[in-house]
Image (tube, rainbow, N blue to C red):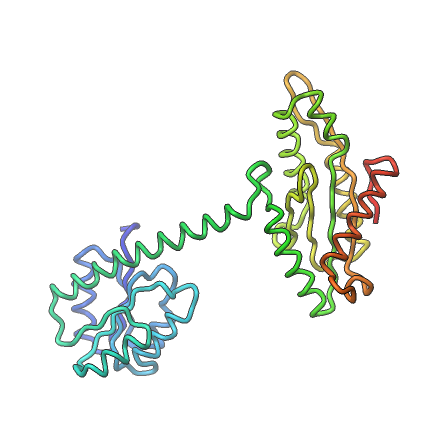
Length: 306
């Protein structure tokens, strides 16, 4: 069944493995079976919610496998149950120290096995729900609710990381600041509701011109937008800025029974030697892009200054 919880059974004894697989499948679980630790590694994925692991296995023993599972960000929340014939308290402590969530002693009681797996299933589901909820909250905290772009908070962190990485490897980096020309007039003539729609659509046009996998587009503040473009030379940065400027100027926004158009001014800064060696390269890059933006607006707007 498509929504069945996935359980990995790693057991080198075939008869025991078959009994465990049959018992779990009959109880509605989706089961992956491995005959040794190395095969279990190949079968592991984020889909595996619970792993039943025999301690003594060839290739890779249960504790080593448990440590691998718990050390990976993709599988660290997998609920691991170590299964073994070892009965000493010190053995149980070793298993728990290796990251195991539970410990069962052979020979296995079938009812107890199912009860422990179901308990692990509840815990794994709760853990994944909490992780998903936390991820959504974190992502929402970085998104501007009006435009759907990243907000200034995310931009500041992303720019600092991009500058540090570019300086570290001697790479190139461009920062583009954009301002919607005469945006106050749009609000005064058509109202703030129309102004919001204009800002949303301009944001979409800008995002559509950026490289999806590498560039970061954000709302810088008010009617200003920003684009962080890694591995972008001054020439390529200027070409990007011109594409955005033209695309915005050609875009028509429905307002009632007519269409409204706006333009943008753009200021481009790239990571040159003078910025890389500045006391605060991030601040220097922003200041240069802001200066170029002012020059573009002062020169008549609807143009790029680089």
